[in-house]
Image (cartoon, rainbow, N blue to C red):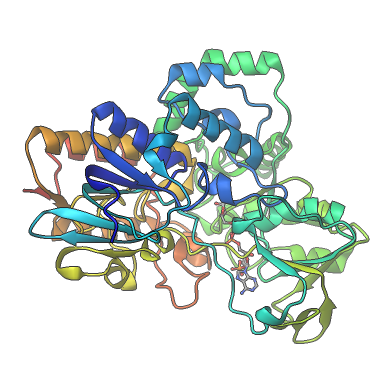
Amino acid sequence: MKLKGGEVDAVVIGAGFAGLYAVYRLRQMGLSHRAFEQGGGVGGTWYWNRYPGAGSDSESWVYSFTFSEELEQEWSWSCRFPGQAEILRYLEHVADRFDLRRSFDFNTRVTGAAYDEPSGLWTIKTQRDDEVRAKYLITAVGCLSAAQVPNIPGLDQFKGHWYHTGQWPHEGVDFTGKRVGVIGTGSSGIQSIPVIAKQAQHLTVFQRTPNFSVPARNATLSPERVNQIKRDIKKIREFCRWSTIGQPYDWQEAEALKVDPEERNQQFETAWQKGGFEWMFGSYRDLLFDKKANDMAADFVREKIRGVVNNPEVARKLIPTGYPIATKRLPLDTDYFETFNRDNVDLVDLRESPIEEVMATGLRTRDKSYELDAIVFATGFDALTGPLTRIDIRGRDGQKLEEKWSVGARTYLGVSTRGFPNMFMITGPGSPSVLGNMPVSIEQHVDWICECIAHLQKNGASTIEPTKDAEEKWVAHVQDLADATLFPQADSWYMGANIPGKPRVFMPYIGGFGTYRKLCADIAEKDYEGFTIT
Ligand code: NA7
């Protein structure tokens, strides 16, 4: 076994937004550290998700770091919702500007991390047989990084090429003249389908659950708009930090059920024309709590779909029913529903006719065979827990994280889990993370973790971990908050429902970014209430 790194204060896993900022802060604190990244470069999500149409659904000027005023003022975004290439360029710029790359070993997958009780150190191992010991283990592995390819019989016989959106070839894929099948209509499917349709000879969309989607209305930013944003950025950022989903807007005081129908429709329509998440999350405050209110928003979108899709039978198949709007992650789109009016696009409803097998030449559902040259799996991820349980993480007494979480993720604040001392999870399950603007969540977590580590170092403490009581209460609290909403009514990846056999538990904290931020700060203030520090 090579002892490449020896012993350091902290090991960071991942080089996305979270890993980059964690390394930046650790360096500032003067703590020795090593960081590992499976990919060949920085970027995390934006390194891997290179599928056509991939991009952020948060506005560019808030989907970025706030820790450096210079960085914020120097960097200019080209448009409202930046694409993958631009975000990756940004993260590469951040890595270079702050000289962060030298902390990372790239192309290095962490395979395991084990806590050693006598020494109080973690031993981290990689697929290259590196071994490094660290007092603190910081996971920056992302929430949606464990790609999920469904186990469809026959995939190995397929003679064409197949791809998962989250593991897209770096050289790109040319679908010109090809018959392409896309499986999945979540955000990745909805972003990629319109782009693939324009290139492919023919596109067949295999849809299991129809999705609601709101127009993004992406647009380039004029120099005047960029300057205005830069002038106001401090105020905008502060608003995001304390808002419900880390965005520059929030729920209104008004409730859908209490305003008159004309006013309500007018408001929905105005926001629809503006585009973006604000249509939902800057709207009536009862939309995710009251089914009747939610139905009003859902019906508005259903009507829009009917209005756009020419063929009524196709429209019927595309119209979501059976779950409240936005309880599955709401996608933003550019001409998604319009794409089904193209002559070269067909829709297959898998609820009527499920996929039975992949053949050498395509795909067969119960009723029909489809000849395909390429298959795109836009089938999502083992969200939140997957990126962590795919690493062999073992805490006290050799307990496996995967085993501990076999009944559902158990954390305190989504940042720590009992039995795994000094392990900090950036945006882990039980934190708000995926319910809003990720960089806002990430910065808050990294800052909190680093301040916690500084506190431990200052006090000569050797370990920190949650008490049994605090963890149990947090798990129950996360569940109670979710149960007060409509979210548990959908088979979503928030609920683990997309992974066969995964416990059906709502994973993120839904009490709001601002509330959570305050809670974390109060806990730190009260000498890390709910944690045992030795
Ligand atoms: P999602 O949102 O999990 O979407 C996956 C899609 O793939 C969804 O439509 C699924 O249908 C479908 N799916 C999954 N497994 C199958 C099988 N076995 N057969 C047919 N269809 C299937 O993943 P995305 O990558 O689009 O988005 C992930 C997040 O990334 C996104 O929410 C943003 O936060 C960024 P289902 O709805 O489960 O019936």
